[in-house]
Length: 408
Figure 1 (cartoon, rainbow, N blue to C red):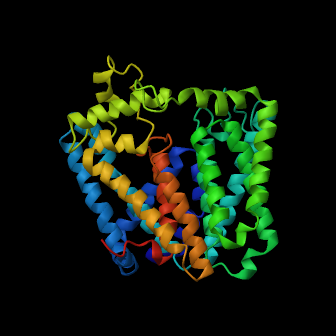
Figure 2: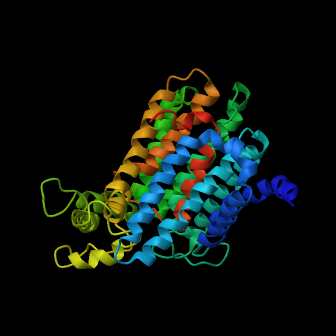
Figure 3: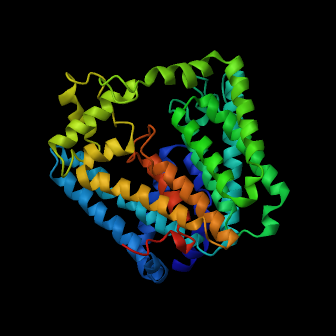
């Protein structure tokens, strides 16, 4: 049985991009099964997993702090269910590391499937935009959602999946693997993803994709000569949208500019989310050490509705505001340390001589920095589907040793 699992389980993991495209159920189920596999066969995995002992210790410490925060929260059952079982995403990252580490063939197969999923989702969504419904009969709504139907997460998934696809393409890179045909395929997928992300009108995904592409072409020496060509294509796409789509102008230009006012002290930068950010701060001030507990923002925010009428939601739409409100000091230290550390790793890897290692780490560091940065709106960090993507990206980032925490 053990031999069967270790020989064939990687083929199950190869299907994970497809599971993500179906929504939270199958992706979370596969993460849960992977975490059980990790627990049952830990003795078989530990010799390789022990290489990551410092980073595992880091996550275990904060996981325990989040669990303790949940125990002392007023609605502790809701909070504990989220915080306690979130450990499965760390196990999933370690499973990804174990089965894909030093296995170029599996990584290439995974990336091939990921590419197909990205292309299919883009074509399906563009078909929905033109015809009014997608390949599965889901009708077009106020915003483009494709296979995700009423969930506005298509742009978020495509931007992160594209970053993962590019990052994996650098693994064991040689000069032969940077052939122009490979580059042109990636550029084609980039344009396909870019057009689709713009049409989803997910501003955070739009910013993520633009920043990833810009800094990737700036930092990767082989791509640097194409920087202005890529920027020109992106500008051209945006100008076409700007001149032909009123909804584009309203969503990305007029509405965004109307949100910003540095002089008005009644809200924090963005009007739509200001009340939620300020409510998060009020919850933190009331419970600075522990916060309100995971997933309790939606409950505690009601206390401040008189002061901040738009301050209630399932989550405060920013990871830093969420960790501040729900986990207090331990939460804000956790997310801030991650952002600072990945930024440090990016700077360090800019000077690595090995092309394969340098490009691999630059791309993954950029992706993780953009995920953990504090400046844009985000989804719910502890949403299962969101953590599935983050833990997948983080797991792959560990397959090359330089992303380990080597010193505290």
